[in-house]
Length: 177
Image 1: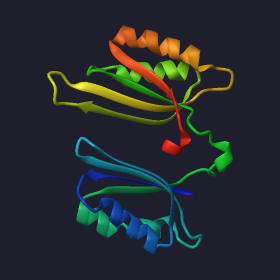
Image 2 (image 1 turned 30 degrees about the horizontal axis):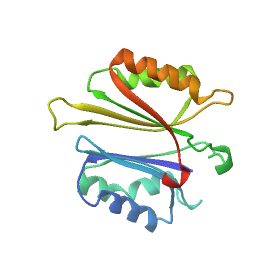
Image 3 (image 1 turned 180 degrees about the vertical axis):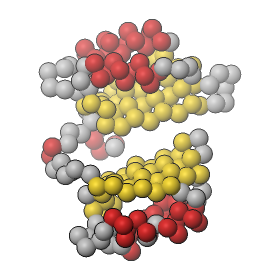
């Protein structure tokens, strides 16, 4: 299994160009995350490649994409990927909203880490348009065995009051992911 990361100024066609190179090389995209962050496009792809395709050869196939689109593209091998049944689906979505200020992500994620809560996805964005910017944080989580949602909800509520945000915890409907 290989990991491809790419970062560069957002523009139409980045995903298509990356996917075309991988397709022509005989690679399969097995998992991906792509996002625009403040005008910068960021992607991470998990892919399988034909056994005869070396890292060097695959890397060179991205030379034109790097030059044409101004992307930084890197590849690396990763350890063996766990089987699907070994990767737990997120069980809850935590949504945090409040006036933008430093420390929201830090404090929320530290609280979750202190309870051995696994974060499977985290998205954040500052929404501008009103009188004050609003910070939105959406986190998918998996609770460790033995930790009930009531315990983490209580701690999240307490922290939310302390840092001046609202927090909501909802069970995940796996069909909506």
